[in-house]
Length: 265
Ligand SMILES: *[C@@H]1O[C@H](CO)[C@@H](O)[C@H](O)[C@H]1NC(C)=O
View 1 (spheres, helix red, strand yellow):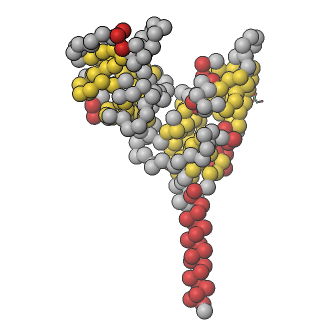
View 2: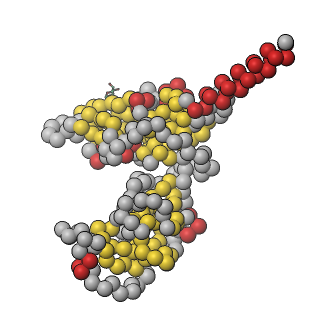
View 3: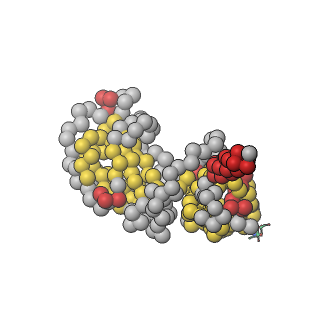
C-alpha cells in the first residue's frame, strides 16, 4: 500500500517536472540582465531545469515591432528602428523609445515586451505568428561584433518573365569584388536577400561565387536557387569558410543570414 502511494507520488512529481519546461513564462518573472544590444533584446532566462540554470538568448526586435505615428506596436517586419531612437529597456521588460510620427515632434513611447515575447525553456521567442517552436540550445554565444558582409561574384542575369532581356549569359569571372553587395554593421539578420537590378523590369543577378565576412564568426549564410528562400538551401556557408571567395558550383538567387547563437531573428 505504502509502495503504491509512493509510486503514484513519483509519477505525479515526474509529470509535473516534465510539463513545466513547455510553458511559456513572462520575461519579467524568469529573466535577468534584460538588455538591448544594437536592436537585439538579450536576456538570461531560466531553462525550467531548476531555479538557477539560465541560458542567454535574443530576439531581433525590428522584425517584430513597428512605429505607428510615434507609438510602438507589434508587427512582423515592422522595422521600427528606422524611425525611432534613444531606446532603452524599462522595468526589465518594456521597450521605451523616442519615435517620429509622420509630422511633428518625436513621441516618448513604451511597449510591454511580455505581450508577445516570452521565455520558453530559456529561449526568448515571439508568438506573433502562433506558438513558437523551441529551438535546440546553441553552444555559441552572441558575439560582441555582430557585423557581417557578403561579396558576390560570377554574375549572370535572371528575368523569368522576360528571358530575352538576359540573352545568353556566358560563363562569368568568379572573382569576388572588393565592395560588399549586402552588409550590416549592427547584425541585422536578413530574412531573404535577392540582388534585384535597379530597373523597372523585374531582373535579378544570379551569383556563382561568394565571400562572407563576419568577425564574430557566429552566422551561417544559406544559399537558395529560388528568389523566396523556399525549401532547402542548396548550400550553407559556415564560419570555417569566411574570408575566402568560394565557387558555389551553381547559381544562387537568394541568401538568408542566420545567427548561430540563440536568436529569434
Ligand atoms: C518617457 O517615459 C518613461 C515612462 O513614462 C519615462 O520613464 C522616461 O523618463 C521618459 N523619457 C523621456 C525622454 O521623457
